[in-house]
Amino acid sequence: MIDCRSRVRLVPAVVFCCLVAGRLAQAQTPAPPEAIESMPIHAGPFGLRPSLALTNVGTDSNVFNVADDPQDDFTATIVPRIVARVRAGRLFFSYGAASDIVYFRTYKDEGSVNGTTDLRVDANLGRLQPYASAGWTSTNERLNAEIDARAPRMQHTVSAGARLLLASRTAFVINARRFDLQFEDGTEFRGSDLAHNLNSRTNSIESGVQLTLSPLTTLNLTTTVQQDRFDSDPLRNANSWRITPSLQFDPTALIRGTIAVGYRHFDATDPQVPDYSGVVAQVLAGYTLLERTKFDLDLTRDVQYSYEDVEPYYLSNGGRITVTHRLAGPFEIQGIVGRQSLGYRNTVAQTAARTDTIDTYGAGVGYWLRPLLRVGFNWEQTRRQSEISNRRYDRRRLFASLTYGS
Image (cartoon, rainbow, N blue to C red; front, side):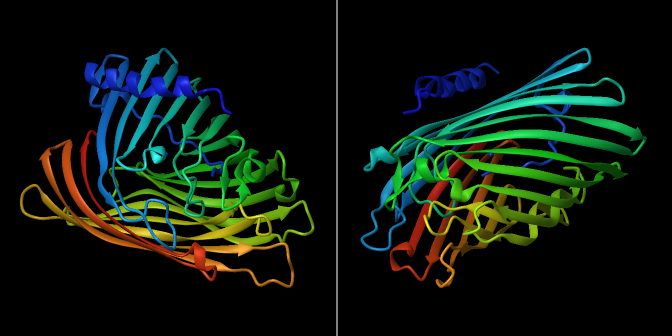
């Protein structure tokens, strides 16, 4: 058992009090902390950004994502968040905390309290700008699209690095990161022991050059070396390297977000496991047309570890696009469509690898009560296709949401 539940249960209470008073892992160049002056609550060297969301308030037609005899239930999630920043001379301190309080009316065991805490300190020493950060997550939420069980786990992240200004628009960056994933002992999914198969640690070092192309656009050219080690299943151990050019856009630019497309060589240490070499990508970008229609794109292509015994990893490849159009006044409509494929790699040469697909589409309406207060109603349909019959499922959700803050 993981002896930290009592500490995690304090997170919602602490975050809520702050609100009343006033997101498997890869190495990447951390974004600079938000300026204090841009935060909704700020005074001198102190800034605060609270938010509160009531999401997924509605029905889930397939709580367990099963092929046969799906069970429906009423569910709701409360998500309080707080971000605080303090400037002290050349130092800049950041703190973030969030908690998902998940409720199910019938299947109460599926409910949970999930907490995340992040700490970071930045120093401005002129041309040299070092940082250090740490993060903790305790959650029962699903790890990814492959594992349908809400399995308890802990995630720890520690990272440090620096940015060295070489010229007015050029900088050298280096980052080191350690990520630990730990499922509770005895946690199973479809007969597989998740703690045995997936408990692991990832060490990575990233370095590269950062070029400021314009006040709103930055080009990053980075190389990453990564080592994955599994506590109880060394068959999954691997060494990787990747080269990833990326464009980072300011939130106020015409195109906002990050576009990263590169090459990765994934070298499994066990000869039974096939290697992977090819294109990887991570795109989180948005575009607003004529100040009324927003396009948000989320694309991912990379290697992900699987819980399966003979298929230790898969190539996750897919994306999701959300289009939001502002109607007259505070009303808006929204459409969502997405697809993700899971291309498994197996250790049995004579067995053909399988590819599962997950399709999602939906629609919704929203109404802005105030500039930072929105209420929404959404319908969403998800379907998984697989050559393994008991991995297929259909799921429909009809839910409302209420969000405050950003």
